[in-house]
Image (cartoon, rainbow, N blue to C red):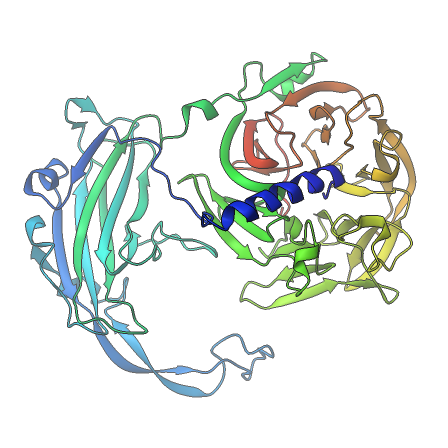
Length: 553
């Protein structure tokens, strides 16, 4: 959620950074090696390759003519013209393709010391490499049992990687099998728990580039390694235990086990918000200040930009403190639903690329700045709409509604379901969906409106009998209530002044979690029992025994 105090601070900081930026270029992305591996096998050397009984192979790739189809519409529909259902067209194909019947036929052995030999035909050229390796019982003098193994290769100029015939692919991904960059290392996690004798067959497609202006060179392997790590991939040691967990009611210890640690997993952001766990196994979250959706991959610990310009694309973006996306959700079909501050609407990213506007007006009036979003199990979308994405909040000249509403989108229609809250923010359903909860953050009267509201959900999805469920006005901070999540037992995890508070279904305080930065919002991730917390400049996580429901379940 936008917070007036936070935004003012951020604007001052941005002004100072702008002055500094006159002399210094800012760092947009960073890739850090946090620690050295425990052991390394250099697969370009005879001795290093022998450690893993490594065998190398290579085969040429041919560019052949073939036929395909233009994007629809075909006889079976496809009105958006997204699929190959239209008229035939001539195109090109790479042969052999991984997985094809004759794919293995052309591979010829090559020595590890010959990987620098130039391959391919030059110009628009591709080459397949293959390596077969076996994880040893020991590396050096140490046992490899339960170590983590990572394969890394740098191909001149680009590479794609498949491990045992599979490649991980997702939107916003860089490396980890897909192209990482120009003459850049490409790293793939082989296993997090080594078993001696495990065998891997790794295929690498080498690509000559750049393609827009073809070079007068060829394809070759600059480096190839397997790195071995003890206790998983390295993380900053000071991130391992950064929070405090307080038990207020004994029941709390059944929810979060005594001794549980809060871990930091990423930092360096402006203001993190709106997280959601993707069914493909990674976390998405917004930074509304920088107009960006990020992707955190727990298997590699990497953070990449998933969608830029995620919430606003207007020419006056410089007037906004938080123009970007905020709340995120994923539906049963795997489509990302986004609350956009600056564009003042709820959208859905379709799986093949188009963007669908689910709602941007009510009775002809534009929304304020949709904040958080949640899905009911039948697919109905609910969202809150305070004015904190507008430059001047409640007094902004762009504001069109007299209220700050909670809305639902059902069967393509938008309906206002509550105007009780002056600053509706986080929202969640009870596990049985009989109740709907919403938090309040009203900067106009912040010390008397720090409340959670509970509504009875009607058969048609509307909300009735809204009442204050819990009052946080005993807290003194100049902040109010933000994100809200509910576990499978109906306990509420609430971002409120002082930290993350856990309440029972009957409104009793059970415990509190304090992190270096107050969490703004949360999402259930991993196996459903990890709670990820977006907190100002960082992302944190902790284990929760009771776990929660994913948005797409």
